[in-house]
Length: 98
Image 1 (spheres, one colour):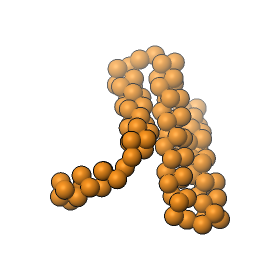
Image 2 (cartoon, one colour):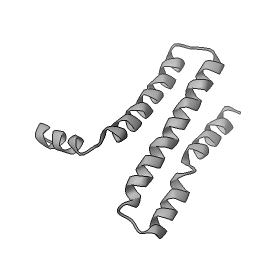
Image 3 (cartoon, helix red, strand yellow):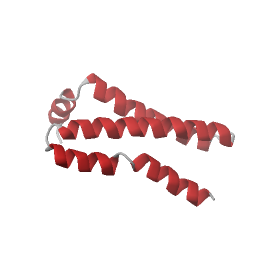
């Protein structure tokens, strides 16, 4: 992609969306930093909870944006599938950790 195309694509993203997904990226980096620095498990858990909440907000925003292009029935299916992803990931990781 050319720089002009990227500028045009990112110019269409509003400030709220950039803040939501930027916050999610920062929360993910926070979790990575706590692991790399070897911080206590409680601190890593707290960072993971923050990242999980940010992920839920990001999925909610993405679903809301998608609902503008889909029918109400299709939007309901997408919301029911994607709405539980953060909890699914949490349960998978918790099972792996024992």
